[in-house]
Structure formats: C-alpha cells, structure tokens
Amino acid sequence: MDSAQMELAPVAPVFDSLIHEQLLERRGRLKEVAAIAGTEFEFAGLLNEVDAALRKFENGRFGECEDCHDSVEPERLLADPLMKVCLGCLTDKQRASLEDDLQLASDIQQGLLPKVGVKCDKWHVHHVYEPAGIVSGDYVDIIEREDEFYFLLGDVSGKGMAASLLMSNLHAMFHSLVPMNLPLGDLMSRANHMLTESSLANQFATLVCGKANRAGEVEISNAGHPPPILIKDGVKGELNHAGLPLGMFSDAEFSVNKVHLDSGDSLVLFSDGVTEALNVDSTEFGVERLFAAIDCIEKGGPRAVIEKCVEHLTDFRGPALRNDDLTMLAVAYV
Image (tube, rainbow, N blue to C red; front, side, top):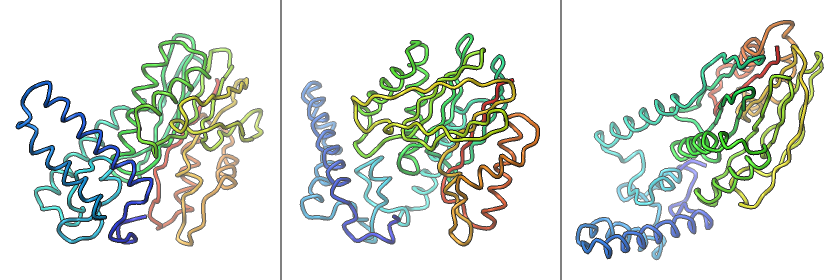
C-alpha cells in the first residue's frame, strides 16, 4: 500500500507498536550511554528528537509529514523512526543525498552476489538477479566448501532499503554459519534464531537452502519459499516440502529432504517475482507457464534454462511494469 492510499494516521496497530517500542529502546540506550559518559548534554539534541517522535504517538500524529501533512513512507519509518518528511517534500539536496545512499546500497548489494556461471566440481550453476528497484529484497548465494557446496535463494519481507538490509543480514549469517559444518536442519534453525533475535517482529524471509556433494546427492530445506522444480530424466516436478519462513518463531525446526541427481538432472529455484509477474491484463505468469518455458529446452545447461525462462517471462509481461524483484537459480549435475 502506498502513501496515497493511506489515511493521515497511516500506522497500523502492529506497525505502531513496533516503532514505538523501537523508539523507547533507543531512548533508553541514549540515557544509559549519557549516564556512563557523564555527558548528557552531548545527546540532548537526539534525545529531544526521540521525545518529539514519542509525543506524536500520544496525539496520533506519528507518521505524518511535517510539510504536506501526508504520510511518511512506512519502509522509511522502519529504517529510521525519526523521519519527519515524505519523499515528495525532500529538498533537492536531501533527495540527492538519498539517491547517493541508495546507489551505494545497490553497489554493496551487487558486490554480495555470487559470480555468474559458477562451476563447483561436477555441478554447474547459473543465476539471474534483476531488482525491480535500485535495491532488492531477494537473496541468492553460492557457498563452496571442499567437496560440497551450498546454494540459497530467498525473499525477505518488505521493499526498498529495509528489505535490502535484511537481505545483507542473511548473507552475513549464512557465510558465518556454513563453515561450522552443521547438519542442514541445524544450520537453518541457527539462522532462524539469529534472524528472529536481530530483526523486527514483522520482518521474515522465505528461503530454500540446498547442500550438494560430488556424488550428486542433494539435501534441501525449504523455509516457506516457492518449491524448487526438479528436472530428472526429463521429467519435471515440484519439491513440495516447506516449513515456516525464517524469523517468525525463534524455536522453529526445519525438515531436510534428500534427492539424488544423475548426469543432466537439474534443480530450478526462483522467487515469487517470477510466478507472480503480471502482464497488462493483471494476469500472473504462474507455475504452469514456468513449466512450459522449461519444456522448450531440448539441450543445454543451467544457463539455457534460466535464459529461456526469462525470455518467456519477458514476452508474457510485455509493456507492463515489473511489480517485484526477479531472481532465478539453476543447478545442474554434469
């Protein structure tokens, strides 16, 4: 829902509670630091801003732009509860600074992506990553470990900068956890606990994590994400085994399923920006069209699969604007 659709007091009760709690926590920390340092006057300006935001909650004006009295964008308030004006009321200097920040965030995010066309022993991997905006909430990764490798594709809640920050958080967590050589289910549980403890209550991520070895054996754990497509002996099917998304409940457990791939078999992972892409008639691309795109592949590795799917999706969407990030990952055993 955009700001034009929202009333003057745009903050839903759950969102309201989260921001209020965040502000109280910030105020408490500022007080603690000031008491320890003995220099409360140095934090007076910031404390006044926090107190002013808390007073807006009391009079029902939190989230209102101080210039036009419209709504400040919710994702910006999540990133910084002290935001006072909406995007439309930013000065040219403020807008240029925001654009610079977004471009820097985009550059950092691009630097976190795996190389295109990775070869891991007997596995070939290809991916496509196309954000709908300057930054993305999709997560795709390949982590190599001796005789095995991990492949991941996920989608975090929300849009814009807040979603991109959570995506970066996922990247850091899995790169820290994978070297611990945990069983895949424990790896997912540990990542879930860390995400739950380090994010807001309305932030979560759907994700598929796979672990493959040189013998063609693959372990897969799915945390609420669209099921991967298995292409085995020319036959396609969905791996319909999914649990809760990451970040919802800290003590959630995650099941692990095993499949064996022979030479020429593949797995295709994708974000919902693929199947939920809309054309000018607001019709979704859907899983059946994705299967049909894969049917058109007679020969070729993971790159051919990805390129054909994107080609079909682009033709289907036509002149319609993209409504979500598009991410796909194909893994083939050769």
